[in-house]
Length: 327
Image: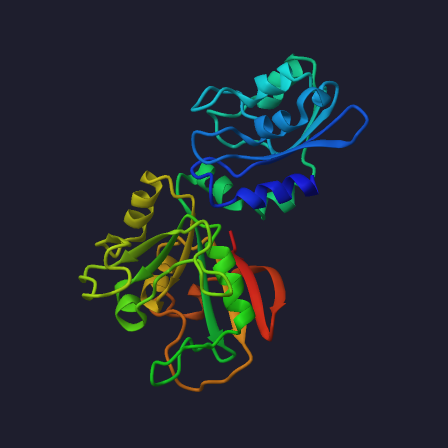
């Protein structure tokens, strides 16, 4: 399953609105003979890719999949039928499919005489490469991660507005790698005016990575003439997070990064539309300067947006904190 998760992570960002599933096929002796990840929309699913690589060695073997195999006809035939036809005798999946249209794969496999097990490394998959898609399947909304970099005293820029660079080179590289696995990045019109971002995913040499997220600008104001995003971004003239997410869902967007600025972050927090917070905290004190968020709907301590910390790691000299709102 660890290998299947790696396959899932490898294709993340290229499959939406389909889930980035990973699959490993073992032969009847337990040797890995096929690996596969879901292909871009309209292409083969992970199970079919792994079975194709395994060929006849799949007969009598085991398929290990991050998500319950689908049992319905969509753009491609059901993966359950491919597994049955290949002679697979045992299927292990991490997460059951929450989508009612695609669920029922385990039952179909069992009816065909295949032994099915579920739940192996479920938490690692649900909080890993399938996190955003599972949220999308359950709610119909894209999953939103609010990412920001701040000083130890919570400032995202100095008093004069300079902010390059608060976080370390290591952290900035992580963010670019993350961007390359996302569907979209959201910023507000104020961020475009102040920072003129490109919102691209680049390597250490500044070259574009193979997959680029959709840049999205939120706000009523026109974009400045000559802005990098003037002709590349989807400009949504609204301040309503639900209108933004509805528009993006209509484009098949599943996994979204909210990068700026403080006003947009406050709007999404007020609306309860932040699904994860990813903070890079640099060991620096700025004293004065703008905060990471404003007008989040918190006027008293009882209104505080409480989070549960999932993970704390070092990113070069910075502290990287991943947290999710408490339910």
